[in-house]
Image (cartoon, rainbow, N blue to C red; front, side, top):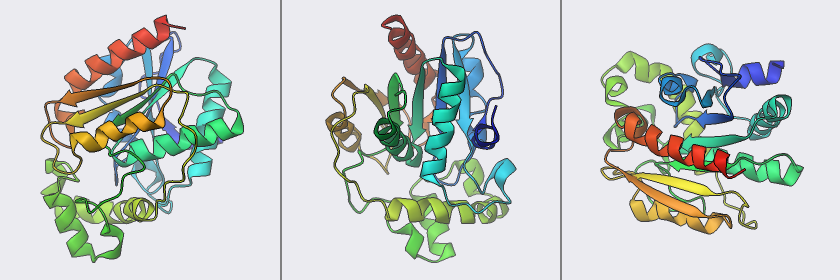
Length: 254
């Protein structure tokens, strides 16, 4: 493993015999630790790697701003060194990052993922006045209040002021990236996209998740999950079953 890939990925349960790898990108303010329970749900067929952005967990000492070009290079290096087919799952902010990573990989002529999974995220071309828009331009107190009110942090964190204080630099960096994001039209991706929408998600509506369809020429599916914005935690069994079945179908189609 290169220094670049070691810095960007956490693989709590290596499965070199698995036929597929799943790179997972977290929501705003979070790190790879949110995916720590995932390997058990996918073993032994899928190896799970959590993407570790800077400024959180074991990279807490680094500035929290995400270098998308470096992340893309890390994915490309990890894929080239391993050779196995792979997929990307991004949750909320992570879905937008994953989308941009795949577009950069295409421009570079690098191997593309078998699937792009977008959880709790509106399609990249959609703009609006959502619960989490404009948060990089407000005070710390308002940022925290709006993130908590909009369900933008898990309940266990929302009730811990000290944890929220530690999260602030990463939250600010991530929301600054989102507020500054400008979708630049490119041809749709030749990668199937599967989107997941929480039935109780007050931040992302189902029709906003459905908009991902326009960004692929290789097939689109939208799944409705019986949960809120953080269904990757409280509905993991349901989400993992859908992901696993789709990944196995993708592997069988090779």
